[in-house]
Length: 179
Length: 147
Image 1: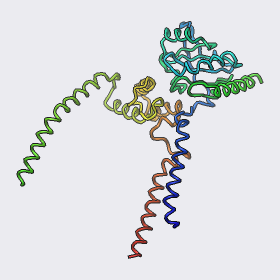
Image 2: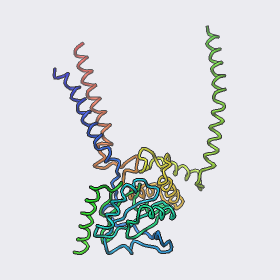
Image 3: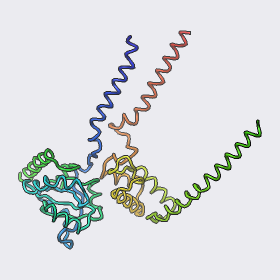
């Protein structure tokens, strides 16, 4: 009798493993960034309205900020846009837009249609800085502290829960910068 | 009997040749087209092979079951360009892999390094093999003694 139960036990163990695997499958698609806790890589990028101007890493240092990667081609960026707008209005720190692999005209038209939520814009048409940042899909949202260290990264659109989480973290970074 | 078998064998070969000739032509033509649109000008055959090997063992993070070589995603294209640039800059294969890992983590490697958290991955098959062998030995011995 006990011998007959062994295959059943193995089967149930396998079943449990597969069910556990199914439930974490969505999370496993998210690649944890190895850059969290590391300084944001150096860069120099043009603006969106003013292609002649450039912003470098040094220009952003001193204050914590949120870096939101988006593109006019990115469907999920429209989905998260109401929350990005709320971040721009309600977060205690600056919200920097990182326009990724886009065309300037398309990006400006998109902003005309959906609204400019960001305090400041960076444009990475070639996508080279995005590679240094480990960006692999839009939208992505980074939190960078006042010393230029990447502290958090959210992959995928911002929803109500993520918004709350980002707000809390932004306040922590703000408090940290002030102390 | 013998000749009939041979005859059918020849007929099969003839049929095969007729069927394969256009396929072969197509394959040769595809090869010519593929090399014509190859955007990279490699310095040597060795460099081309290194590029191919790297692009095949680096995972595309956007489309996660494809390698950089397989993927049409714009990011995969950017990363292939980056690999090519680094090859041109005389960087070693290991340096190029490190470049990707620093940005995207071990996840980009189809062959992750042996470390504490990958021990099960690398050691698992060997452990299972040993369990199987031990079980087989036990079963065989029992059956022998039962005879």
